[in-house]
Amino acid sequence: MRNAFADELTRLGDEDSRIVMLSGDIGNRLFDKFKAKHPSRFFNCGVAEANMMGVAAGMAMNGLRPVAYTITPFVTTRCLEQIRTDVCYHEAPVTIVAVGAGLSYAGLGPTHHACEDISFLRSIPNMVVVCPGDAFEVRAALRASMRQDRPVYIRMGKKGEPVVHAGRIENFQIGKAMTVSDGKDVCLLSTGNMLPEVIEAAHKLGEQGISAQVVSFHTVKPLDEAFLKGAFERFKLVATIEEHSLIGGFGAAVSEWLTDSRTPNQNFIRFGTPDAFFKKSGEQEYAREMLGLSAHQIAKKITHALH
Amino acid sequence: MNVAVRKPATQADAGALKIRAAQLRGKIIDMSHAAQAAHLASSLSCADILTAAYWHVLNINPERPDDPLRDRFILSKGHAAAALYSVLAMKGYFPIEELDTYCQDGGRLAEHPPANLLPGVEAATGSLGHGLPLGCGMALSGRIKGETFRVFALLSDGENNEGSVWEAAMFAAAQKLENVCVVVDYNKWQATARSNETLMLAPLRDKWAAFGWDAHEIDGHDIGALAEAMQHVPNGSGKPVALIAHTVKGKGVSFMEDDNNWHYRAPTAEEVVMARKELGLA
Image 1 (tube, each protein chain N blue to C red):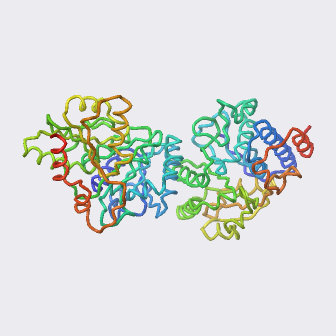
Image 2: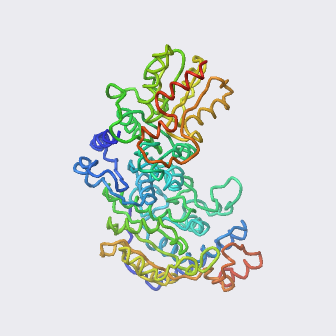
């Protein structure tokens, strides 16, 4: 996802002279093209995220469209008050791009895990929370964020994830869920980097004769309520799947909506990370397996829930 | 926009500015009494700095508060909002009568300056350590867009406790933001204790200099000296400018000066009369 982000940002930078790139001292060589083309609009802000976010807000307040980028916990939790007060309170159109959603950097340990960021950011007024499911969704989300005149948070995975979409997504809209494949028994609502895992889970369900619809529910805030309404009416089971804590994340947002809209929720199940730090060493695949977020585990739990 | 003539304040100017500062202090005291609001001493402490900035230094036009070329003044020590509101009203950004609505239900003048609500307020502040990063972003955006405005940020000394101030200080120096000026209202008190007994600020000028700034100590109640130093930003050093302004908390009213109880206390009607008399206001 991150290579797609750097490439799309360079293209957008060509098209729009307001776009400025702020990096928190990561992405060695990742932004070489952007830097070469727009040297006056790239800033390595160092390992000083609070200042980076304030600088981004100050730029946006003077008409620019800054993109602030570093590893997820550092561009969210570390500078949360700057996001809240400088960016969101001022309605400054800053695009915050995080790399390493959820357990993408499992091997780096809990300092680099990010399973709380959706919860923090979606509770801040004026903030939009987008979790793209593949590299093409990253491109589309970044492009769409530049058309928004407000703060946007884009939560990316890392690099080398499977690509889901066939090519550029022309009809991408922030706040509109995208159906990836149709089904009739169960609706799998995936947000962010879980999408390839969820597609695999749907295949496994298919092998057992269960027809699963796969949806990339890329925008957690604002929620696509119309889509949810239809899904809960149509399907025997609806599941949310995210690489994020069950507290405050996408599934929690759907739960809130279910309660507030008085929608019957007997057919709802949530997948996410538990209320605990994951301290063992190991890469993302291992962490998912240990936390019940692998495709076969998702499929198994869905099968149980249907019977 | 007219660019202010860059010349030192004359004796006559200095006299007029002193009267402005006394009037400003009178407004602040009236507001504190009416609203029974805190932070009176912090507001009095920076009254001369605000007077020098708004009546002598800043290239601003109250009739065009959104002029892209205006100088930016950020009250990073947002708890001195009463001082900023008084200045903005006296300058004509909004009617002077609106000061009566300070801290009242439904008004625009909260205890800290609001975002996107009141003309002349460049940034919502109140949480310390935010004004300088914002100001650096504004200054850099000006550089990118070819706008030559200046950015002034007024910080409290207690605010220098915040790490984000020093992150921004290093950033501004690395980016050579010579059109950025920090003024530290160094009144030696923070909310509940002596500043240097809380976190060691001293030697504060040396700290800012070590962080790459053209740093100077200045009498924070000498309006002429403040005006002179601020109006010469950028000053040719190629560095951002830090003015460590030595001030007295509660300045201008003998029974408030250097008494930190006035960080939170508001004056009684009798104390207002006494204070106004000391300030030479009827």
